[in-house]
Length: 349
Image 1 (cartoon, rainbow, N blue to C red):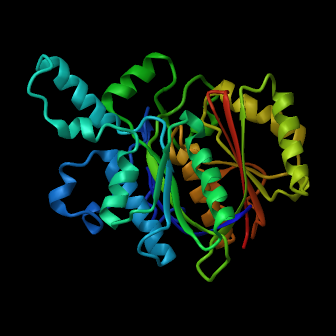
Image 2: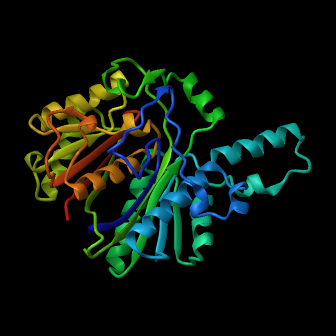
Image 3: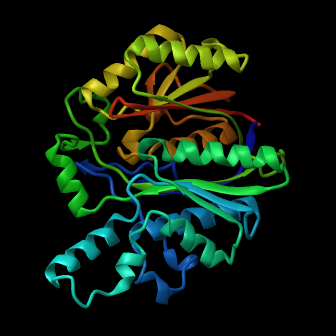
């Protein structure tokens, strides 16, 4: 089963209204989101009670629905690895400081992983199927596969699918202790060749339908996952078999959009597989635009859909080769810490 992306919305370190015409560059060890004016979609009295993850998810979902020209979807399916970290931190901090006494319920209610999807449904008045996948770096991919299954059951549905994750001071401090992040510049991140990367956050949503219409941006053809491959060769064999099962070969891919993040070991893995399969295929990267986080592949899908719709790839994204003119197929390949590999194939409508 395939689906057509009929509307997209993204809140990330880049301004979705001008990207890729204007690219924001950052220095340090993280890429915070470029917050839009949330008052466009959320009542000002509710904004102050919402965590950042909720605001990002609500904004991105409304952008995608507006782009698709629909008011309410037939299902809301999303993924998140960390959920609402800020509200979780607030609740746990008060739990300790107030000695488990006189705790306000708001932070606890909004700390659950399905809070974002629930809040989207409440604001839309949508009582349809609502599901949140919490499968670390496979969260978005499981949400997309669930969406494809629902469309196979009923092709008339319009499904809102996406993912969101946020950075907090607590989470960033803890993860940095593991040596995951480093101080760098996004302009030079892909050439850094040292351990560590830059943290990121964001939300991206898509309206999926089974039929092509005048609003369709791209076709979602394949969503596949590979967990803990034994070697780069196993990954290459899996990817080659995946392409062949869909009647394709490496030469049919116009662009590989990979999750290179500036970490020397992580990037070496991509390089090894690319040499085996995609020696003549242009390769681009996306994490120097959005940063590293478990559901960063949602940003990549948003970016790839835009490239296919515009018929152009920003030169700033290129790692190898020239940016292809009018690309036909873009393969999004992302791995998170070498264990979670996902492959998402998008085609031009």
